[in-house]
Amino acid sequence: MIPINKPWLGVEEKQELLDILEENILTSPANNGGKRVQEFESSLREYINVKHVIAVNSGTSALHASLLSIGVRPGDEVILPSFTFVATANSVIAAGAKPVFADINQQDYTIDILDMKKKINKSTKAIIPVHLYGHPSNMNEINSIAREQSICVIEDACQSLGSTYFQRQTGTLGDIGCFSFYASKVITTGEGGAIVTDNDDVAEKLKMIRNHGMVHGYDTALFGLNLRLPELSAGVGKIQMKKLAQMLKIRRNNADILSEGLKKFEQMQSIVNLPQETMDKKFNWYLFTVNFKDKNQRDLVKNHLINEGIGATVYYDPPVHKAPYYNNSDSVSDDTLPNTIWAWHHALSLPVHPLVTENDLYKILKVFETCK
Image (cartoon, rainbow, N blue to C red):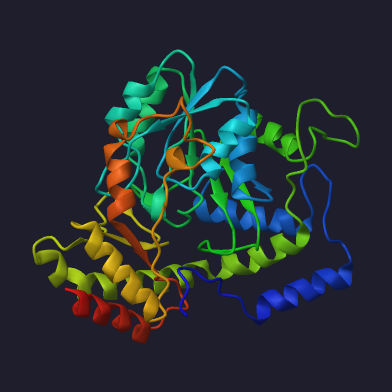
């Protein structure tokens, strides 16, 4: 079975873990983190060209801590797409605020600017654009609207490490950016995340928030939690960063093979629309997500791929606003999020991670040929 994503781990990561176990320093409560946390943060800081990186124990913690750092509290509203992993919305709930769901666009599944603008009111504290599947959101428009309203922009870049917007790394375009290093992501620390910002004051708050609001010992000055990244995880991440360029290159090559092989299906009565980069948006190819004109055709192809051992996946099934916790009497109607509902029923993600072989890719193409 070729899963939708799979971490690429080798002897270097194993040796790093053995070294950490030998040193017997597994974590650190220091304000700046342990040795390997600092090394991992330094490599991320250099790669994405940002002033501050604060490593935490998950992408969810990154989002939650970011909201806390800008003072989000009960009564506030945060705008985000429903077409995302539930952690984006859960982080808003955890901060005591109300998630307000905006629609997406059909071109790249990122937040719809016009609908986002309609959802802004006097209670809006932040906007969280999600660079879904590694597709950058339209950050120039988002930032312009947010600045006019004095609203903070927190990028959910959990899936987009290595993606660029006008040659700048995602996560560095808003006020704060959040990354995830879960096992399925472009690089992994097992569980882990990071927050990036150029704001000195926000960075200092975030260091405290990840460590119970402390700086030196038990001097808690603001609300925080144990969101620290262990040295074991940071050690793996440090090694993974050395492989990042190679992993992104392989992902791009795999995506190129699928794009070339699926072009003819795109031309046949719009059976499938392929992901398209533009001059301003370059993808990390976290996933290769296509959409079908007909839901039944999508499901037919998906089932055939799974039968052939290819982990084709429907994200997000269902969208957040349809999940039982959020689907209550106060929830938005499907009519207000038409593109979200459309993507739910028509999109399909294919694996392009570094452990996918060319034979696997040609097997995917053969299934499409069978199902046309």
